[in-house]
Amino acid sequence: MQKNYRKTLAACYLGFITQAITANFAPLLFLKFHADYHISLGQIALIPTAFFLTQLLVDVFCAWFVDAIGYRRSVILSEITSGLGLAGLAVIPDLFSDPFTGILVCVIIYAIGSGLIEVVVSPIVEACPFEHKDAVMSLLHSFYCWGSVGVILFSTLFFALFGIENWRILACIWALIPLYNIWNFATCPIERLTEEGKGMTVGALFKTPLFWLAIVLMICAGASELSMAQWASAYTEAALGFPKTVGDLIGPCLFAVTMGICRVIYGKFGTRMNLTRFMIGSGILCLCCYLLASLSASPVLGLIGCVCCGFSVGIMWPGTISITSPRLPQGGTALFALLAMAGDLGGAFGPSLVGTVTQQAGDSLQSGMLVGSVFPLVMVLSLFVMNRRYSGREKGTGIQ
Image (cartoon, rainbow, N blue to C red; front, side, top):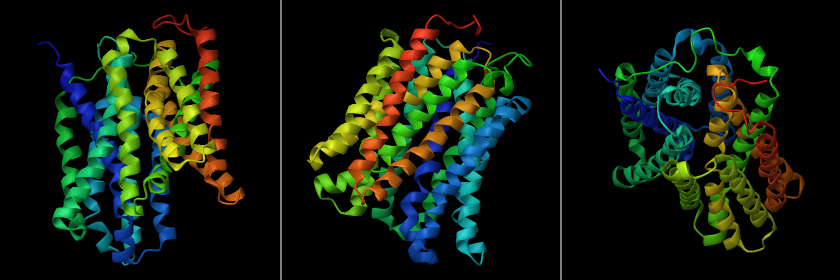
């Protein structure tokens, strides 16, 4: 029987939607947690820290153990932990004398799933016999954006219709998506990215200059994306005068929509484009967006810079994977895991740097954004180096 790789692709789409749910649902409830459980805002700030730190650790561990376990078991485990963690939010916090501990337990459980999704889903698609995999990869990653928008909009609608006090029901509803997807991943065809025992080891990757260049690209991709995304709601409030709650929803939504549009455009028309040039152009646009946000005195132009930045960063993460994988054909799971780790590292470091500079500059957000412009600048320069030194490295030729 002919294998149905479209079913594999559909399962991977739902995988990225699951990751979007785990990343975006709990932040919508921060103020509810604060009011119902009497958790301080300082403690609540630790929730996203625990999420991303757990995801970062999973990225690192995946470089060693995913090949031994296998893609199918790993990705099914990702859906199980994501579903249990989300559903657990409705029950587990009330089982602890300190509800904050229960919330952290659930966050860590579904963050394990999110980290596994981030590492395993991309190589599963890369191993499928699709043509124009860079376009397929871009379209795949767009589902994280649409998932983010869907979580924010549907949750907001649910709260408006049924009240935010019924958030536990919604947590269980969101958990149904990963739990349903267990069946998809259990029955769809999944191929190995490299033959067993022939993938590059972590040590071999560390000795490859191209690998370190890809790491720089991923750090810059994560930092360029999240340094601006963290401030999207602030720009929405300043430019349009919306109250904070509305700004928190509209800002991230606009950013995610434009980022998703970029990925869909490349997914549909990428066969006619040169990926490296598209990424260089996106990096230049991203640099201009940061400069517009940091140097413009107009809040409206600042908002335009923020929204357009979403479009400019859309190709950075999936594009880096697509231009690196063919040049390191034996990189295997270790390559994808360490690239994901680098992206998460950039996503943690970038916003922190912008925030630190903002504070030291007398709470001048423009100064922080100006420093943040270094990330797209370094990315553009790194892409020029990769294009110049490794443009002839095609899949199957190896690395010399």
